[in-house]
Length: 254
Image (cartoon, rainbow, N blue to C red; front, side, top):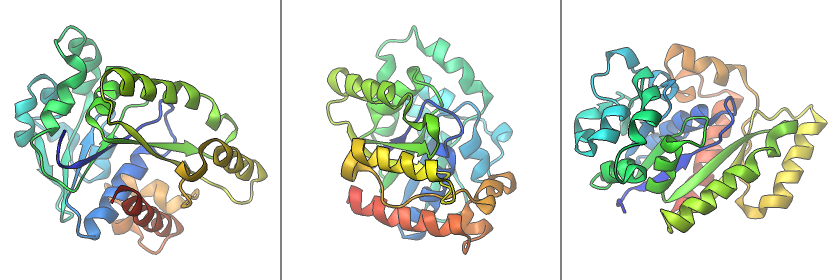
């Protein structure tokens, strides 16, 4: 497998802070001197635009990379944020699930592409589904990080997700480990949110991140400016949370 540390960030539910976590952790890792590549594997391309890259202007995206893994060198874009690069995505990727289904060794396409790369970290922003794109991410990754929203239905679907991780480990990628579970959109005034955290702690023990990402307006609005929270408002609660989270993440992965 690649010399880079490859982390798939995955939850089949949309709107759980997956992309927000990818771009902001990437920004803090880069600020800490790490060389980071973000791979946008979501047809919505939110990680791409969230890092300030015009997704419509891209000529080579993760779509091309999946069908010709050797094109990855031409797909890597410098975000201009220092130490932080991107393989972007746009709506073209939506067809990939169908197009790749007939290909040989289809689950290994992304792994083949990432194999020759040398970064400290490669973070894969997965789509909100458990289809072939997510399977490609899990097959390529060393670890999977699961962001979970602190709300009533948070635990629903987690069992199914962990089952898929187990199956990928058994059949495609025996090295795959659970990096951890991250609580996002936490509202301390809501007693239910704390109950969800307690429940997750019971299930996951020390695999649950101590750092919790709060609900934060500055965090929510940053992507609309094509900025990470580090550029948008580095003193906000959201920024402090991702700074602490990234420290904890580095300890776990070192």
